Length: 512
Image (cartoon, rainbow, N blue to C red; front, side, top):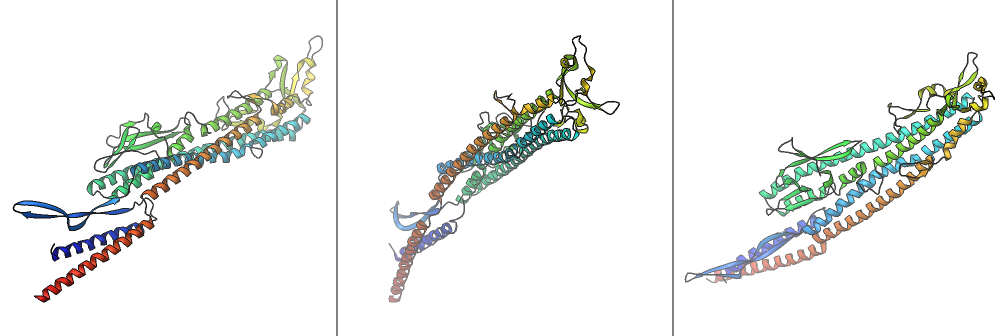
């Protein structure tokens, strides 16, 4: 080996180790950068080729070393596990966050909310039993009934507002997903133009961000680009976005998704799109708004249905008491009016205590209201219940003076009795109205607590997987320091060799 060749080997080694030190410095500078993968320099020997009598011989290890490649530590299996657990955690976190809104509203069902107002209503009813002809007592009864209606209305409006907020958040998630579709296509294009570890990190970063919103299903092409799927539909293929995600929310039918072709906007896929989302924040929002078929947690529709059922039961039961019977039947509820002399007298009650604000026949928490005529005239409340047989003589003649029995409060007694009357509910249970509300609130609290615990468990798993992945592919300062010392010493040795050969060549030249 000639001195010139040895000097070239030493010089090449210095350059190699200088580059290696640059890579180590880059690793250490990015130690706290999320998603950064450590890099390692791979060396290979240069081939030394000789020609002798037309025979070419290749000898390895006789011409120094070179930088063969730069390895980016990316473990795709571990990466897939990490983004899957991240998607699961974001599903439960989104669901738990939405359910916490229900929990806040549910606090308004208790003694300081709806149940408390029901108790005040029954107290007003008990007062009406004692003073059925007193205007102030009747006004208090009507106001208590109106307070209950307004609380039902308020709770329903809060549920609707919560649903709208979560639907809007889901729309933001859809927008973010579409933006990431575009970013992935652009990163794929960059990968084709200039394949590098930086581009691969960018692609993985996009996929990791996508996992916040949805479960990520991909296939990797031979050129390093990544195709993304929703179900079995390739929404991103290489550098092209084939479909964009579309959303639609209707409070009656729920939240729905579809895929719209970017090539033919009239072509929209609806079947199976929503069902293809199995985890992620968007799935959590949809399950809250729609339920998932086997829900073990309250949804916005289930809690509204329970509240509507309570409002309907309350209104119908009291209306039946308010308009009980008829004069023709001999037993009937009676309200008050005044005669020509201005005296209070009884009359058959024909006005319902409650009506719907939208004119429908079915009461709900959103449409229940006190009959406007009763609000205007509390004497229309039927506090009395008349049994004409008590006013009929042996010859069958009815004493018309029954109309002066304004102290009768038998119907008000029935109003009060509703407090302890067990009703049959849609789930087959038998409970008073207050018990029904309390039972639903308790059940909701337990189910929400269960989801919150699942969210915490899923987040713990996601954090552990992220830490393990970071330890696997991230920067270890101890390793980088060891490499830095190794490459620095190697650089110094190569430099000393270069200097020694240079001095030796100078000596030889001077000797000539």
